[in-house]
Image (cartoon, rainbow, N blue to C red; front, top):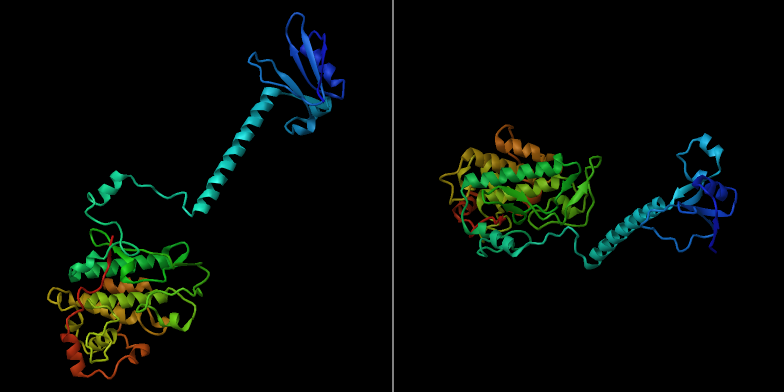
Length: 375
């Protein structure tokens, strides 16, 4: 219960002393007037307002509540006074900070409920019009980008540029990131091309982070048929070498302009990757490249690319190169031997005779060939 008493103390010091002498005194205020007025509060402070005239109310606090005081000051008096405007300011700051924290937490809860990220960017009509060139082009198709690149035949120089750029991107994910990233779904549809045909790896929905202290990750998620390494099928832990296998399959498609799951000769049981490796072993390079670009292709680059593809799809992951080694082989700074035909692929084919080989070489590529997504 609040109680206020008025004393006829002549000075602020005497008013303060009067409050200190009474253990029940909570606060005091001194008004310089004629005569001077000393107000003493006993009990709770009620109906106290910040006055525009600037008169201060001094609240009594224990010395232990003000740790910045020296021991000499603490021993001199067991009670001190704090100006009410100062207390009010502190309380106001604490209240405002608490409000901001509550508001931020509320926004986070609402974003979770609506399943919409707080950082979701909103585009204006003008930005969309510029991005689509006045709505002539569609933004996105499939998961990421459009496959309009499939409408034209890329020359070998551009294909090799895409292959080398993709290999360098995988080197970054596997060897240069702070945490190793295994994409888990490397395929042409997840390789975006900008206006200069520079590749960018996209769609990390299945990606896994692997710490530098670990080289394997056990996962039930699987990529796309036709690009899966044998360890995916057998359920073994996955390493970056699984993506080396996927890259090798993409290389076969870049070289030939065919999807690797398509048999080019219906009556033949030849599988294109095995046919390419058999031709390399025979020294026949010209027939493995897309016949539409064979006349302008750099056969040294074609051979290096085919050798890389064969090394990448070996059954034993220890026999596959790392992606940094793949880059060196493609660039011509590292020598590589002609790989053997993997045992897992040998079961897909019968004995390769000259008739089958000739039939495969004469068969034109399937329609538009490998489809990369245009960004």
